[in-house]
Structure formats: C-alpha cells, structure tokens
Amino acid sequence: MHPGLDDLAQAICERRVILFVGAGVSMVVGLPSWKALITHMAEELDLDPENDLHGTGHEVVAEYYRIKCGSIGPLRSWMDREWKVSEDRVTESRIHQLIVALDFPLIYTTNYDRNLEVAFEIHDKPYVKIANARDLALASSEGTQIVKFHGDFDDDQSLVLTETDFFARLNFDSPLDVKFRADAMSRPVLFIGYSMQDLNIRLLLHRVWESWKASGYSNQRPASYVFMPRADPAQKAVLEQWGITLITFGDAKDPEEALRNFLEAVWERVEAGRGN
Image (cartoon, helix red, strand yellow):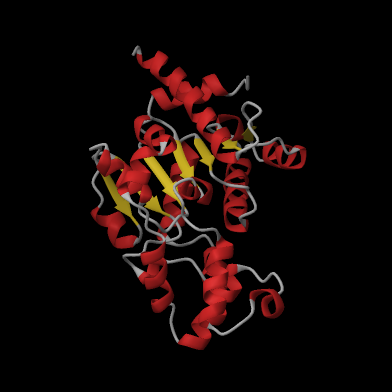
C-alpha cells in the first residue's frame, strides 16, 4: 500500500484537492487516441500517415492542417462530432462515477470533450465550466469548477491543438495558467490519466516547484500526487525532485483497471473519513 494514500484521502475529505484529468480518463469511455486524430487529418490533407508523416506529432499535423485549410474550424467540428460518446457510456463508467462522488472542488482537464460535464449532469451534481477569461469572470463558487485547460469545443479560440498553440502556452501567462499556478500553490493536486509525457504539463509542474523554491517556504508546499499504472523509477525520481509523489497501485496490467482500482481504494478511505 502506498504511504501517501491515506494523506491524499484525508485531503479529499477536507475538499482541498485539485484533480487534474488527462486523456486516459476519456479513452475509458471510447474516445479515440491521438493516432486516430492524426489519421483523420492525414486523410483530409491527402497524406499517407506512414509514408508522409513519419511519426509526426498531432500538434505539428494540426499546424499543417491550419496552414493548408486556413483554420481548424472544420477539424474542430469533426472532433466535436466524433469525440462524443453516449450518456450511457459515461453513466456506466465507474471511473467517472468515482470522480463525481469524490467531490473535488476543482477539476482541471486537458481533454476537449464534455464527458466530465456529462458525468456531473447525470449524477445531478452542480458544476461550472471554465474555458477562457470570460468564464473566469462569470464563474460562481457553487459546485465544482471544471477548468478546460486546453480549451473547449464551444470556443474555437480556446483550443490548444496546433504546435503554435502549445508553444504559446509555454509562456504560462494565459488566464488559465495564472489561475492554475495560484490554485496549485495553495492546494494539493492529483494527476490521473497521464503518461506524464506532456511537455506543457511537465513544465507547468516544474514552474510551480521553482516558485516554491524561490519563495523560501518550500517546506510549506501542499502535497502533489501523480497516479501511474506502472512504476517508472526515472519518472519517480524526477517527480520527487519537484516535490511530487508518484503513486502506483496494485498489479493490474490494464491502465483502466489500475486507475479504477486506485480510485476505489481512495473512495473507501474517503467514505470512512466522512463517517459513511
């Protein structure tokens, strides 16, 4: 059993934890991978993914798409249509059930889809969606804030999809970046659904660590946690250097099963802490 699990559960009981959700959570309800997106863009651009792209990342292909097509509007429309799943799939997802039940005050996600919002609606739990500066200004404090960190299909301008978009976010001076830095300085953060290969996320974690280090009060920093299905000694060492605890749980080889088992274990401890 991981020694950080009880501390994490206690902080969740106190509604202090920020949940940060990656693509792995959306894939459990059937959303396509980045590879599927690249394949679609290649077809639209009359390219052969294997022979023309040579493993090029989705953000570079999306940049090329915008150059050739003039905008990502058609691509955004296709993603909005294709990246929807039925309410039944979300209803049946135990992972989404647990995310709602754990009652996080703040959820950040790099996913564009509406699955988190749908899960809250299905379980009749209040939430407010934040995808841009206007949403920040109008957001109420009632319910859970769901912050669409890489944008939302309802606002093309908010999407972080092309290489230019990702480079722009590396400055970490957008309204959502400022919000996250402030939130992460005051609350524990739990990352799920990530392989921790996302350069933006890694750099953001590094910046938060640098801010605490420069403050002279790094010993007061709230705990942060990353769940990964399997142990990775290199990731563990680097993340711990930044003050982040890497949690692995059980011996399930399937990432979805491993995440579900982890959230179930956290939920059991939270329920016990709440006296239920």
